[in-house]
Amino acid sequence: MYSKKILLKPTKRLVPWNDIKLMVFDCDGVLTDGRFIYGSAKLELKHFHGHDGLGFKLLQNTDLIISVISGRSSEALERRCNDLNITYLFQNVANKLQCLDNLLKELNLIYTNVAYMGDDWNDVPVMQKVAFSAAPADAQPDVAKIVDWVSEFKGGQGAARDMINYVLTRKGIYEKTVLAYLDSIG
Image 1 (cartoon, one colour):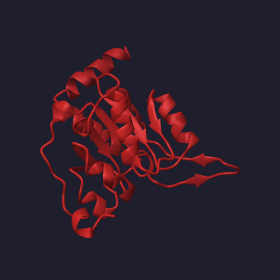
Image 2: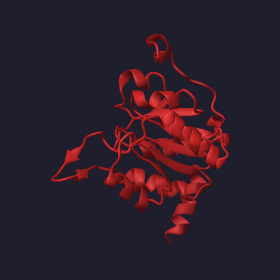
Image 3: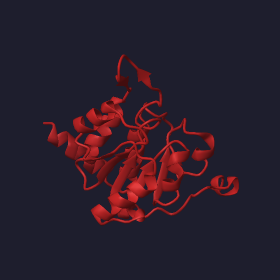
Image 4: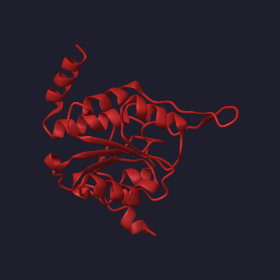
């Protein structure tokens, strides 16, 4: 599928920050620490970080669209996305690139409009096509080598928020976004 030579080649590139319109996140290993806690019957628990949640609230004061694409299906993730008003949630996705391609068509966007954060091999096809790719500090090492930016935070411990802050800063709208959020809460 991918040769080691291609995978280990960094994909650092000039990012058209003003063109970024869609921020996409993997779940397990990005929004969570990647661990699964199974209870009785079909109960599955996940740890989500409050800092990431507030980051998504910040994004809602911008024109950026948020999506989560997960290779697994989880009621906990569905609840978290509902709590955060994240409309574009896709679960149990085997081919994330095809899923994103369909979303881009629906939104009338292209890959150069996308910032993506993932942590493992199933994220690589997307990472190689989008304008900006990122990974948490504890992403698979070979995957972290090919992204444009690596957060100093681990998955489930603020990595998504770190990327959100980074993108908002690079777009030149971080301060304006924070002030809009503060105004919205009183």
